[in-house]
Picture (cartoon, rainbow over the protein chains, first blue to last red):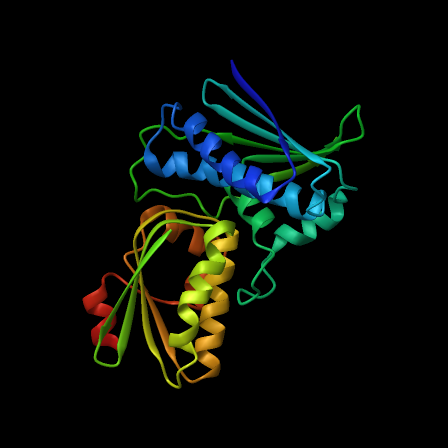
Length: 156
Length: 110
């Protein structure tokens, strides 16, 4: 297993840097461009959710990111210092997009759609964690997609 | 993100290059403002060289679309990479945007 652990300050600058770091990490994965973009997007959306909604853009807080790659499994775990999202509320958020013309509120839906499993839990330090697990599709033809796939939501 | 503007008759074309995310979303909205503030604007957003887009970038596109519509204008998106197209499908934005294969097709469709 390959593991990458990062702790970022909860700032917009760190958000920009984190995306570049995630890009470098994901580019080491044996997968085609489309699949790598999906993994980068999962990480980006989880980070943005933690930065804006979890930590409320508070620069005194941190975002912890753990990326694990084992065989065909890609796992992204992002922790923030916010109150978290109740499992039922999360389910409501991802069940359907209420209005495609809303200018926000798509991030978690994207993570859900691109992941095989999403887990929500508080860790031993009382940090709120979202873990997204995706089976890496290798050598996938660009035309073959699975956007309609829905992941399971679990609270631990 | 770099944005190149070209005007052909009554049609404005913005060619986007790079990442459309939290950092660049406001830049795109700012640069689009004088185009979409015109009545009945015709705007093409060429996405050919977008190599990353996230929900912040999508939100910026929706904002531009709504502003353009309010003035009776039209927006067409072109050259969506498979990855971008997939995100549009996931988020149901494919239903609200007019998406063309290329700039020429978009120009012809106004």
